[in-house]
Image 1: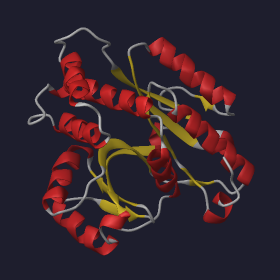
Image 2: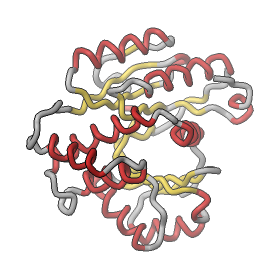
Image 3: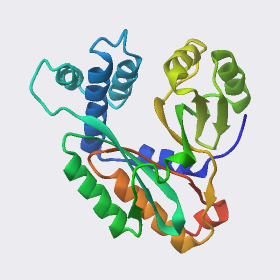
Image 4: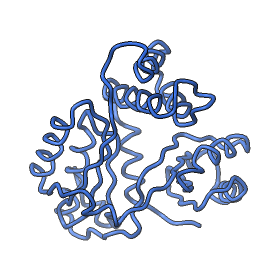
Length: 250
């Protein structure tokens, strides 16, 4: 139950150094609105909302912003009503990419995603063109500095997790989608410091990108997609070997 995900490490580092506070808040607010709309405004009975609120507080979002987002999701006050959409496509080198977004205007978001794929050497595909290469999983992020791989593995098994991958900066605990929040809460009761928890898509196999120029292009595309306001997550199936990653300057 151990391994190493280069993309998880890259994504984690990018999130850690992201100074765009307003954009982060926008993504968190949208998650709160969608979670409220789908599961109701009471976090005691809506684990997705409870997790979204925890992440917002960890980002130092003001309580009034959180409460206003919940009211918007519940329809108590006027505001945009977001829905979740998924885009699929290919990046340089043929890597598969899935883009998870929340939007109040599908036409606008589709145009922005399509333009970004084209601008950075990728192609937006049709629904289902790459999703068969991924599976839905619950993913729990735990800072590597807070617990050893061995201790986390033991506690993850006790909590009912499916798998654990460890890197230099973050441990990733995998669960069945429906078990994400119960496993998260079980880990927290066992004293594990959970940084993030979400249901996402995980590649069933990876594609090695062994050319530095191709790797650079892939990373630029991923970053550009991730920077779009409507985009919540960008997932891909590529893996960059350490010796190639060291040559890449994005």
